[in-house]
Image 1 (spheres, rainbow, N blue to C red):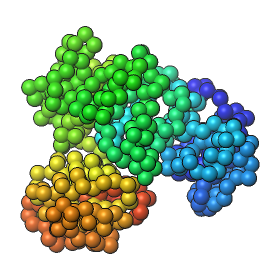
Image 2: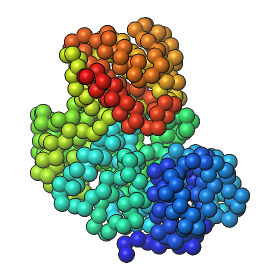
Image 3: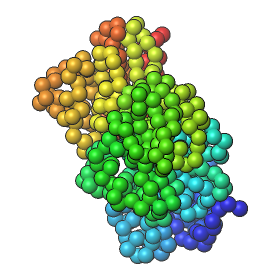
Length: 456
């Protein structure tokens, strides 16, 4: 058995029955823990799952709060659940340990962790690293914030397995022992301020990715991002930088149009031509450099790395080409859930842009985002709770070509009506999806369905 049976007979409260909560519940049942499952929604799980929990003997508090909060050994909260919730704080003050599903997974399973975080580029870089590891012949799972709960794979992991893990600030905020062999912080920009309250708190949560690393581990940092490189001095791991614009003594960078990497002896190894990358934009070049550094210092050869870089076409919902209709290109960047990500998408486009933006308000400032419109964006269609906020910001900056519409169908229909041959209609919301959709994936799927209707 690969699992570490550390929760046997422990009394554990699982809060939030989304993807990670369900995985946590499964893992704790496998551990033979005594569990209570809580969610604010009464109908949060399927009938099949409810039957499984009842057969196991789990206590289910769906739509209510447990009445025995002073009796738990641990509380496992989902990433979407604030740790400041009153009943969570009550359980913790009574002696329960607070942890998230990532920490739970680390404790119960084996395997080797690569952890990747940052404000933007996490999903692309995590997927790319995972593909490189698989191409090298290593048994690999791509997990975490990318969509597959870590616990669902960690519970059966072996000593030889690699878990390539996308980690969010919410997940990192509840770790204690989690220690990746290689960690990476891709970049930092204000995000999730509705939850973290300040940019400093957000950075501190991200920095927890390396807090348990030692000199035997590696920390990959973006040399071109000032806030990211400031964290280097706080790390005990071997810091490996990557840069799109500077030549480095150690790390991954660009030289004469080639991606190269210098090892710890400062010997340079060529990887591939920058022009061979299939993923567009300077931000994706940074993602590729980060993936090269992670993979190389995890012991993978440059030939394997290059082979994957030359064939990797990116991930769904991140600057995803949805085809042409009447000479107009449609691009799905629903993963652009903050202003900085949307700015990068706009910069990656060469055509005149008709932009679709707006959504859930995470407390972002949109000034820099709307300043990027000048000379690039012809018109902006806005939806969601932030529509008025973005429109007002744009008008204060002198950009008046904005229209608020009711939904995605109207956005795509109106964009198609005013688009001219050679234009690009870009969905890059600069906001989360939660005011109108269950996830950014659902939002992107709706956009693509609307585009498909245009093709008929």
